[in-house]
Image 1 (cartoon, rainbow over the protein chains, first blue to last red):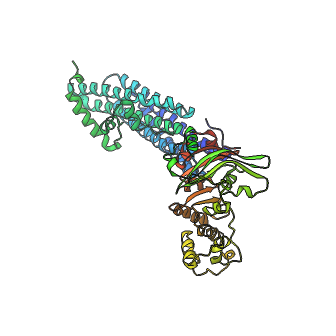
Image 2: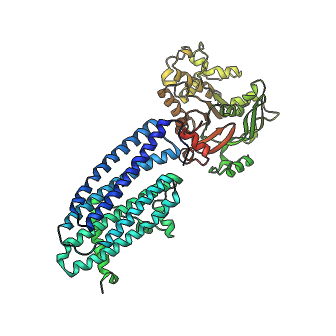
Image 3: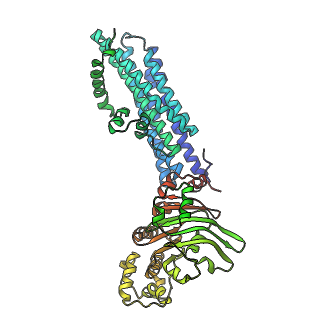
Length: 269
Length: 270
């Protein structure tokens, strides 16, 4: 880590931004683990209580934005400080979105808890744990200024994507078996999708940590290089779901249904 | 020159086509005031028609460096320099070189605006030429041209006979720049040109620096990191008489490679 600033107030402001980001990350983790417990234990009251954590996350987001703007205006940061503040302004949005997705998960859990269980939700919980682990690692890498650790998280996003694919295929068979499963299966599928997006945001955080430490942007291009690709098409393939919240769900699901329905391996024997 | 480029490359500086584009360059330049060494083997190119900013804490040798470039360092009693300074590939310290001629080609603007206070605006502009014994054929056209280049013409065109000392601080500094430009220099050295000016006057000088880059090679010594970041194409960081880092300004202010540069520009020094 760099040496302390000569100006202690400035040092304090940067430290405060760092602490608030970590606090937001901790709140997201808390939401995710509570939501999963509410799902397996069918604890609607816990799910409803968890919703309120998002308000704290939103408040922190505004505070981080405000402090970053003040630091930019008054301190005109450069070099590593500039990278840190610009990174904070981006990461704060990712963390806030994760909070919103946490809210969506809780809402689906409440709906599911009003129905008899479709199946044990082990896979979704495992997936959420993987996403949570990614976020925790990203925040640890952020605190330690460890670009290598952050880079490793980027690679792990595909594991969560694979979880999502498996869960989706399984749910599809439930829906094909009995239309009465559709309501619950689509709820579970939504939860899996929200978790998958949380992992995407955790990946964004990790990429920003690499930028903060090394001053090197590994988004998009980095992915292309690692995959050994050369064309624009592969960059598109490698992209994580960037779709806007409203449109994404139905469109992406529809595309997924089409591709899964065509794939023989996705059907149950 | 080639040697200086190799050294820069060895430092990892990403300077494209330095060889072809350096108007001036310092090669292993060291300078002393008596026993005290102020510069330690500085090797640095000054790219043609670009702005190079020199930053560093007080006493790091910034001003001494630019005073060596136009041979003003040696006018101080007890001051000496070794190494070389090349202008268009030729040493300015050669035995056959007239220092006065060097100072015409490499002009200088100082920290405090120093017009001749009782001399008129017009005569201030022409002062350098007259002191050099040059009498330009069309003085009115020349005065208009250089005041225009110094972005001062519109403000003083109706007051050319007023004394230079009656202008505002920012106008006086631009008048000094005009006086420097009247000698048709190739390189303009500016030693903290805005340190005594308010933000508006500073902004005008900075805009002027930006415009002058089309015609001149400019070196700006500044204490203000923000100013260096705003005006320069290349930035050099000096510390304790040494050149610590030299690179594109964008690189210096977003991802410097030397931790001493990082500490200085982010305010983690001392």
